[in-house]
Amino acid sequence: MPKTLKKKLHLLFVLMLMAALCTGCTNHTQISLNENGSGSFEQNASIEKALWEELMDGSDSDEWILTYFQTLYPQAKITFSDEDLNGTVSKVFHFSMDLKDISDLKPLLSNSEMFSVCYNANYFSRSRLYMPMEEDEDDPAYGFSDELEQMLGSKPEAMQKLVSEIINMDCDMTISFPYEIADTNGSVQKDGKTVLWNLEQMQTERLYALFQTSNSVVRPKFEGAANGKAYNTGVSLTITSENLLDKVKVNDESTQSDSLFLSTEGVYQVTASDINGNTSSLKFRIDTTKPAISGVKNGKSYKSARTIRFSDKGSGIKYASLNGQTIKSGKKVSKNGTYTLEVCDKAGNLKRMTFKIKA
Image 1 (cartoon, rainbow, N blue to C red):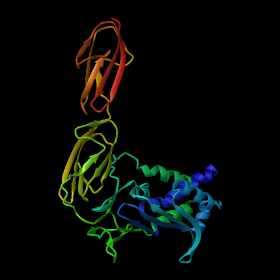
Image 2: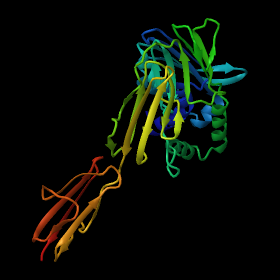
Image 3: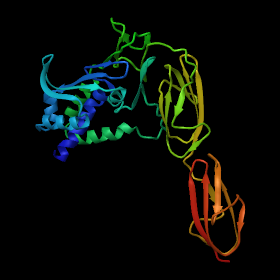
Image 4: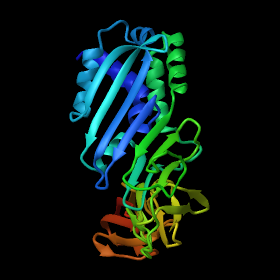
């Protein structure tokens, strides 16, 4: 496949299927689940044929599209056809796949906007990843949008039409469960086991269907971080619960998500409660700043004694060594020689420097 065509297929179809394969925003998504998580997934996405051909510069792209997405989902049945939809000739992408277990469904519902999927005998939930960002951070989606805009820069009208079609897509998802529905934020259908979510109208970070509430007193569990620990990278935190989560608090903010990504420096207090009132808490720190050192500088030579001081305002000092020997802040060095100083904080941030004394 030519690289330019492959890039166009990826950008355009990811945008078109960003809602479809990953967030359920298409004409209709139908999912059927069995108790063990096996089942079926079926979905359609469409775009006006004339617009598609304009975007693709008239390339005969159907075969490439089928090949490209068949490599991503080899177990799926994929067709790409021209159909008359309400008097408009459209390109229609049909995707169907049998699910061996819930792990097959999770990628289909989570790739684009990073959702987590939980399913057991008590409940089903799909929640958006909780990922707070600092005000000056760029949205990860901007890079994709900028790349697409650059590609279509010479076709502003086509770009506007494409965005309009995506915005005006019907956004609903139907899931049939093997259990009676006790509660949901969707619409229960006549059989009592099927839920319809109109995603276009819903402004929520979580879809859920409650089947039953067990008498379990097991508290929610955290995976990805340990209580009292410090980390020098972002933390991906997953909350597992036998019962549907009622609320999750991250410091002073509330979320319904069971999947969190936290990367800003600071102390985090995370509390999770299920609908039975079982509650768990976790406290940890993210510290990406190396310890501060004064008295010596890396690569410098000194003609007099030096007093080494160090501190860490984040997680605190774990250890400090001079030529392999443990030292404390305020250490005075006067002998001629070459010295290697290492200071590491409790999050694992290490600052190393070498200096000389030639008195």
